Length: 321
Ligand code: ATP
Ligand code: MG
Image: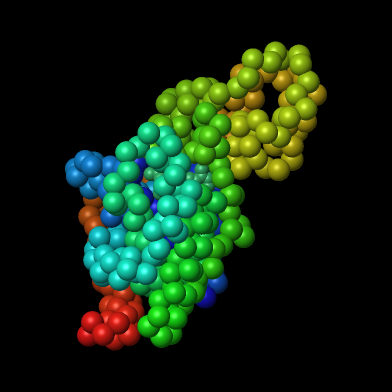
């Protein structure tokens, strides 16, 4: 079973990335080979600062490695080191109906937020399909926001196979161990581009401030809150604290008598403790400034080998050889 997933270097990695994609992907390392990619081409749809992208890419690589990538079992590289995916994007694009791309939730959400769309944003799902199909991935662990993109990938793969003959593996969306959507500080989906994130490796004081700023309603400490399970802090609590502790806080909030300030303080402590071993690992890895470049270069060579052989099949099937 081959697993593949990607993260954009569009900003620092946050706990939505961790619980939605990184954690389930790392769990797959014990079940087969894994392909993990920092999708820097994708980040161009929202970030137009080159030095920032370069810095973000290194930081994201360190973050992800510190979370537990096992380089013996997994291939880890950055997308632009395997430019074959751009060639495949064009080829798949010729089979992607406009109507399909116009229905993409992620595209529609970004437009609704006032982001003025360009071709790259519109074509995002086709590039993502190329990322997945170029590596014969069978399973793609991603957050719920990406589920539709994986479905589009399946459609494109099937359409290619029908048109040009059996070429691609049809991948599956995977959400088995993941959390569908982690809410951000404002209660909406946590996203790098929405400025509502809690970073995996943020600075202590700032992370405390961020948690204290989680948006709450104006109900008082004494009021019972029957919707306690919907509370953003409680939802985050469940991710970082032992189940019984989270359940206890939820029950106390429901009953009334637990102040939001106390809830947030406890949330911070659990969050900070949860990621403590990852921080330690990250500090060790960061001590050698050449480490990340070395890892990514090695990963790129392995990834490129796989993509080249898949592209041979594609070129052959399409008469481009
Ligand atoms: P951007 O705002 O630039 O799109 P992002 O924060 O959404 O960034 P991505 O790099 O687009 O992060 O997504 C990387 C992975 O993390 C994807 O699998 C995505 O589904 C998952 N993910 C992102 N945000 C969340 C979230 N809030 N809850 C669960 N999974 C998430
Ligand atoms: Mg995203």
